[in-house]
Image (cartoon, rainbow, N blue to C red; front, side):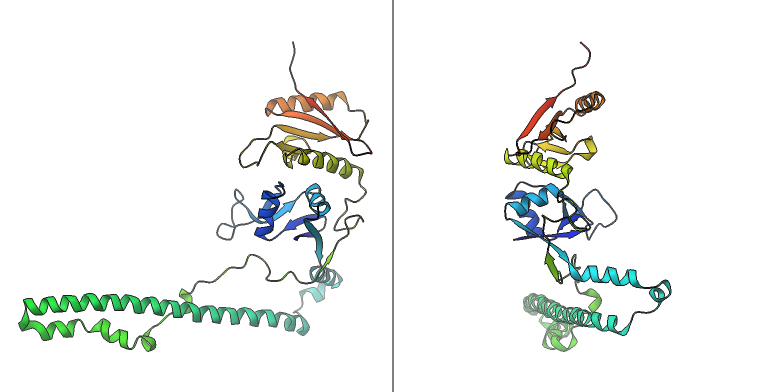
Length: 308
């Protein structure tokens, strides 16, 4: 089951496996909004978490693929910070707060120590293999030199005993500084903490879309296009509600700009002209979409042909 975490009306998916499932199995795209660990100072390529549109969230929940949850520990911390006075907020943390952080700190230190021991063991084995391979080569070269220059046998033996002696006492002499160890940089909290499921049918701070007429129209249009096999993303950059793709947006350009209107509501002529010219400029067909109370969606394509 996919966990969708809510925060003030925004929905996020943190697990890479869930993101892959959402895209490959359910045909939903979302939008990556997280910074990459190795390149945090750029925004051309982003990573986890994946932010979902409200329509994508509702669709995943209705088909039984996901569950909405919200964090309880984070909310408690927020309320606690708001309750603090300015003077007390600048003061040092209380002993209880320090004690709460100690188990996590001790666990992380233990993880680093175990990781260091494991990496030192692997480095020691690699060093041993290197010295053993050098010792074999040295023995071959020493035998060759013995045959060629028997009068310098003692000098040859003394000059090539270094790696062999080091191999005998390698466990005691091997040095592996902690600065050289590889450290895993976590990109998320190891545990989500206490969470509770959110009811999508009731409006709240975390899910304010329940009962909104605009959301109901957008969702009916979104679901209808999704059932037809289209991929949809946000169309705000093109002046619409959705961009409609015939396949995965990584492989196709959008063919339509979907604009949602309430059923049987009059549309100003200026809005129709604006939408038509906009679609022509970006080489896409504008879809005027509306849904009746029964959920049936009507699509009207709009293309600007100019003056005849």
